[in-house]
Length: 307
Image 1 (cartoon, rainbow, N blue to C red):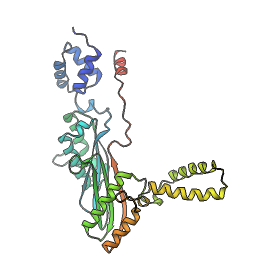
Image 2: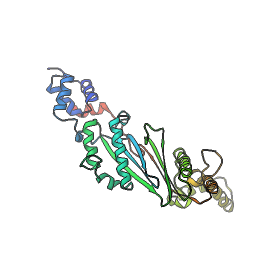
Image 3: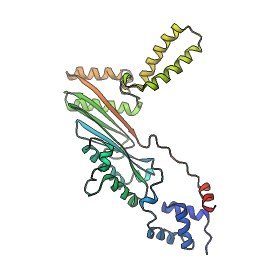
Image 4: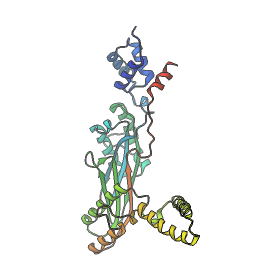
């Protein structure tokens, strides 16, 4: 009987995507023959969804869908960027975005809604697709924005195909201005958000804890200068204003021209349009943000397998 080495197990695992112990068993059952072991794994259904559901899915795509006054963005993850380039995977993400639009971007409602063209839910369809595509997949996030009058503009940075990419932005503009004018402005503002990743829309929207944390750091820095408290207070006001200009959307310098404050850009656009334009919200979604990717330690896995 052939010796089942760690290298042989790794080779089968890389080819099949199956777990370590499954690969070892397959090779043992097939005298170390890789191709026969591949067939054995398929026959045993080892590559079904439940065998992959524990693996970290931190790649994938975000997709946008809109109808003018409403727009949504969704994130569907895969394990590798290779699968994210798969047309079948891309088609799934597009459908999920369309279903999300019909459900106002609500994550739970979208997950439970019927997947277009089937009789099963979005969640069930994605679970079934895991076995077909061959990697763990997860519908991770969905959100949306809407306005009573105006437009929600969408932007995909470096789109892999229309409406799909790694980074998506929505910008909501409430106004009676011409839709084309609003969308042009909205897309520029969305590009700005993609580049600067603001923490909040306005100063009032800032997380109080983040504000206090920044203040405390600045106060300690100022005290080290040895200046009196009345001077420190003035210093803190100026430094906090600078902080807000760095992290608050409407306080930031518009990246398109590099000199105008975003709030002024909107004010100028409103003057040109002859009517009020109000920025009411934004969403920035980047694939895999916040997911802790696991570093694979193959040697440790081999040791655990043989113990």
